[in-house]
Image (tube, rainbow, N blue to C red; front, top):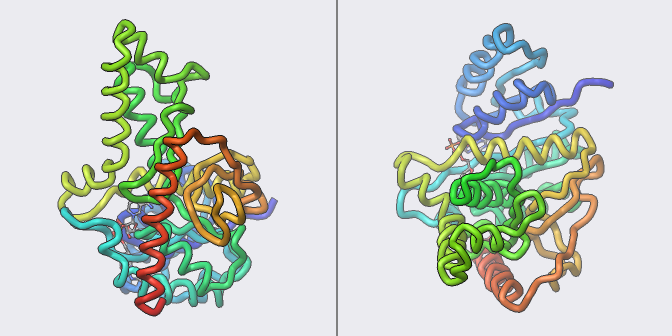
Amino acid sequence: MSRKKIALIGGGQIGGVLAQLIALKELADIVLFDIVEDMPQGKTLDIAEASRVDGFDVSLSGTNDYKDMAGSDLVIITAGLPRKPGMSRDDLLTTNAKIMKQVAEGVGENAPNAFVIVISNPLDAMVTLFQKVSGIPHHKVMGQAGVLDSSRFSTFIAWELGLSVKDVNAMVLGGHGDTMVPLVRYANVNGVPVTELLELKYEGDKEKAKEVMDAMVQRTKVAGGEVVKLLKTGSAFYSPASSAVAMAESILKDQKRLLPTCAFCEGQYGLDGFYLGVPAVLGANGVEKVIELSLDETEKSMLENSVNAVKNVVGDMERLGF
Ligand code: TXD
């Protein structure tokens, strides 16, 4: 098996952690691109110099030239500004759309056969723009948000129940904004519904159990902002990197994991020709299938609300000329 190559576009906070995680997992050789001179070269040199200690055999290089991403199997994009306290993800639209357009041209020209995972915010709009400008087929272009939002939800559930997070399965659908849809009904711990475990914990007090679940759902929706507020100088970067690596691994190793992915819908969930966070099978062909779950009336209306929020941002972007 020949070695895989991953290009990381954006060598900031998330880009740096991505490079280190990919190296530790020996998932692929790494090219880290940024417009800032010397910085990606410095970061990759630093990570490479840990290779003896950590025992990984991958090649790492930093660059300011798009040509160096030629032949990449997969590209992960974090180029763009992160939020500052008080900002919504949508506030980043104009600045990051300009950056994403440049990036899409660079990737489209130099790595047209790669799979692409976009991380930059506002996520749903940035994935849409990247695909349109790069011309890379829809099934190869996707966004990372749902894996992280679901991991956050799972973490809160594990803390609340005092159980291992390894056994928690919870999924968040919809756009990567405050209208995201954590799926309460499907959340479980090794198959046991979380709603049931909460009722057991609160000795049959259904109201209390619901109150606690509602609070976890709410915390999940604003979890990105909670981190931004604490960090003060940027947004979450460890967990978004881990989440994108899980998606990359599923594609490069053809694992066929069912992961919440910002994927192109063609009729699913009543959406045609539109990117949204949905459960998708990720394998050697990229987004191999979008799974359409049955949703109850409340879930449907929450998802519709989220779809409208995404449509508004994408509409704003188009009105701005992107
Ligand atoms: O789950 C998710 N999808 C996210 C997304 C979770 C958290 C943060 N998320 C978003 O990722 C965040 O709102 C930002 O839009 C991106 C990247 O976040 P990061 O924390 O890594 O931001 P940094 O540290 O500012 O890094 C951005 C880098 C920086 O080094 C810039 O020099 C570079 O992007 N940059 C560019 N690279 C390439 N090409 C161009 N044009 C360019 N412009 C800036």
